[in-house]
Length: 112
Length: 112
Image (cartoon, rainbow over all chains, first blue to last red; front, side, top):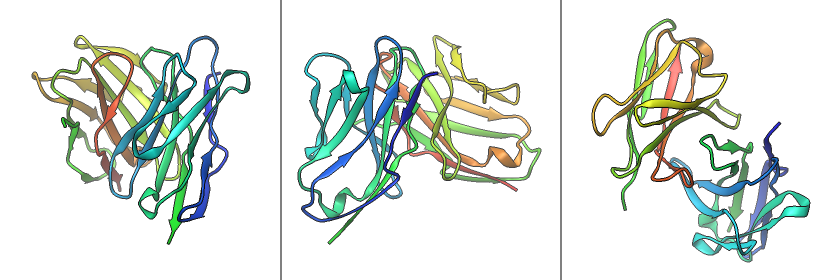
């Protein structure tokens, strides 16, 4: 069955620390991968996406993600987090159809 | 930047009542979606809509649910007879192609 899993449910970091959030997917065939962010009280916003090509994808606000096909992973990274990065982060996958399959989300708290 | 909008932001209803959640997708988008997120759980796909008909739906989207595009701008989700377990945040999304979905701010539905 198609699924997306995020291993870190809660992450607490100090400002300027590096971030890596794990995402693994289980899909047969072609898969499109996304990271969405939900800031407190706001809606889901697209951070970045991968469809094909360069497996290292750069998104908004200094985030990037790397698609590693052999590991079925699409981890999100940021070299130096800021307090304003405090949010819920969702990995999602789709197969160019309609439904997006979301992971459970990772709650990131960045402390000053 | 155009955004998906949803109304109301919060809705409280009694069990057994009908509710209609409204969404205004981004104007040139052709594909429309509803998702929900029960508190503490992941975002789940409900239904997608294209060319005035449902293109895909999940097991959650049973006969109690219906969607409609009553005019050129609105996209609605109706729950005919709400149950306690329908309490959730409901997100509308739209996309121009089937690739990237843009989400609205959500409607928090509480069924008492």
